[in-house]
Amino acid sequence: MKLVSVAALAENRVIGRDGEVPWSHIEADVRQYRERVAGSPVILGRRTFDSMRDDLPGSRQIVVSRSVDAVDVPTASVANGDEAAIELARDAVAEAGFGTAYVLGGGRIYDLFQPHLDVMALSHVDGAYEGDTYYPEWDDDEWEVAAETAYDRFTLREWVRRAGAS
Image (cartoon, rainbow, N blue to C red; front, side, top):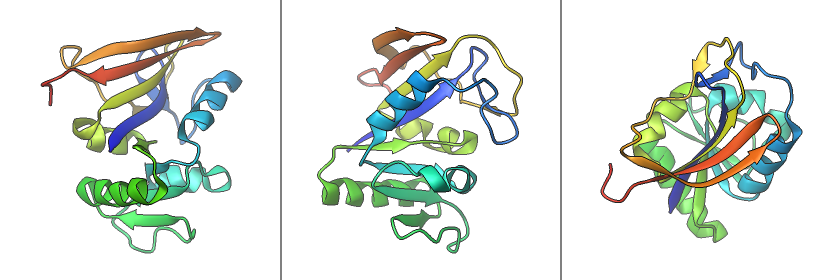
């Protein structure tokens, strides 16, 4: 199974402020994000899950939470940490016939799963923004840009972990 994080981040790595993205809506980014994760298992934190309840992507949601009662959606299950979530994602990938599971945030979830990632699909939004949630830093020696597509207001970069990097 390939584990891929999907995020939109500003030039200063800000991904959120008060539970929302701090920039105005970018339709092209939302579209490519939905197309990317459609039908695939997704891993997300409880607050991110709650904020997306009416628009849950993926065929199966794996919510990382300490509370087993954190979700009441039939397509969602709860994992109490990264290893449990990865195991649930492996099962979901095998069951659905997909090869990829996606990590959708928030900030602490991205940080928790960063060592496990194979790919980061990051929308680098133009400009720096004030925020309270950040995408984790990464070591450029461990990652390389495998694909890059420029859009109006952001650049989508697919970062792939270099062979031998952990």
